[in-house]
Image 1 (tube, rainbow, N blue to C red):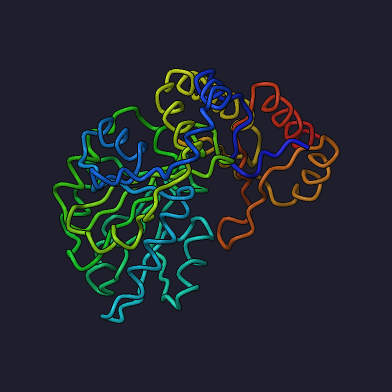
Image 2: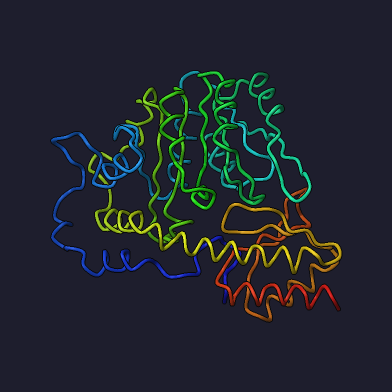
Length: 345
C-alpha cells in the first residue's frame, strides 16, 4: 500500500542519518542526556541553540511537534485565571481541538478565505477576534494543514504586535522548512515578544516521523512553561544523535524538497486544467485539490485498485477536496494518471 494520505516521507534518509544510527555508541545509553553541571537540557538543545543563535533556555524539545503543541495547550488552558479559550484556524488539523477538549477548552475558529488558487488567513478578523474574545491561546499553523498556506515573518510580526501579552501565540511550523531556509526571524520574534512559542519537528521536511523528535523556541518570559515542559533527566540519546545528523544534512532534504516542487508543478499543469478541478498553491509536502464531488466514489475505487491512499476531506466547506502527500516521482505519476483516467471518462 502507498500511503499518500498521512504527509509522511516516501524518500530515504540522508547518509548522515544512516551513519549516525549505524555508528551509535551504545555506551552513551548508560548516562542521562541532561547536562547537569551546565543546567542544559541535552546535546540537541545545545546544538539547536547554536544553530539558531537562541539562548538554550528558550529551546523546547518534545516527543514530536505534536507533543510540544499538546504541552502548550494543556499548560495554558489550565492556568489559575480560568481562561480556557483557544482560537484555531477554521480548516486545520483536527488534533488542535482534540487536545483542547482534553482539558475542557473552549475552541473557536477564525476564518480562512479562498482567493484564486490559494487560501489566506483573514488577519483583520483574527485581530478582531483576539480583541473580542481575549483568548488564552491563539494557535496559528504556518503552513497550515490541509490548505497549504502560511504567514510571512512580517505578517506574523504584525499580528504579534496587536496581540495582548496575556494571549500566548503558538505557531505550528511543522512544514515551515519547505517554505524557506531563512530562520533568522525566529530569534527576532521570540526575543521581541513575551508570549510566543514556535513549534517545529523532524517529521516532515527531515522525513523522520518515526523518530518522534520535535523542537521549538519560546519567549524568555515563559519560564513557567519551560519548567512544565522540560524533562528532568533529559531525552533519548539515540534520537538526539540522529536528529543532529539530520539537521546537519539539510542539503539532502533540500534536494528532495525540490523534487517535490517539480511534482507540485506537474499536478498544477495536468490536474489543474481538468474541468471542475482546482490545484491550490502549497508550501508544504502535500497538495490540496478541489474535484467534482460526483467523481468521489469512482476516484476512491480507482485509488484502492492501485493500492494507493489519499485523503478525501470530510470537513464542512472543504468536503470536495483531496489532500495528497507529495511522494516520489513515480508515485505522483500514478496518482495523476489515476485522477485523469477517472476525470476524462
